[in-house]
Length: 317
Figure 1 (tube, rainbow, N blue to C red):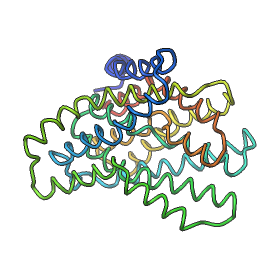
Figure 2: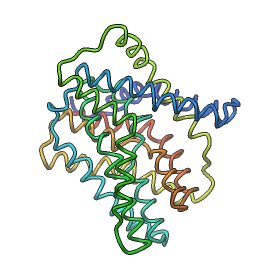
Figure 3: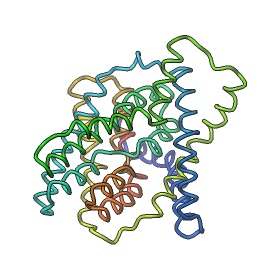
């Protein structure tokens, strides 16, 4: 199917209910009296219960990672590496940031909101065949990108790399419920086991509710942030994330001949808004906290249009 404005409009209409839920959560948090405690509780439930149930069931039932073209990791993380370097250069040249600020700035251009936004989009807008490629990238995403920015910051601050920082990141990734559910579900399915009906049915119910709950939780989280501080830097982060990142990933995917399903999955992931983890990293290193929080809001709002645009572009024949 050729790329056309009608195709883009169709994708925007398909995606619109997802972003309506995000903005519903934002409204509840901003004006509806749902404070930080409500946001924290819903996010904790999504991350530790609902999302792991969905991913474990998906991977155990039909998510054989052995059938996924592993070159998608080259496309996705190769694109991340290119954009990270470009982001650091822009941060230095345009805003005069120091090494730590450059690292956080660049992370905002490559770290997507893959769990709260990416999984629902893959589940509802693409097909079930896209879940394993997304899951494979997710397994390595936090480990590689958090390690990258940690080493970048440590080098900027101390002029050396730290194995301690890598070890801490590795432990955090391996104990992450989302990563554990993907790996555990894939292993469970690979052994030919089936989930008993009394367990599978409630897991299916949780899986069905995970997407809407994730999107509302994302909106609640965004309600805690503002957009007043450092709007030039935050707008630049959003532009890098929504335009340059998916373009770089797509270019590498084409260059290495990545199959269509894997290409669509990694470009979709790259086209997503900046992830909340970037704000957490900015707080950890006390760098660009206002700019990254604004970038979260700006990129999430704009991604309601840009994500369907990238999906339509990669679907075009």
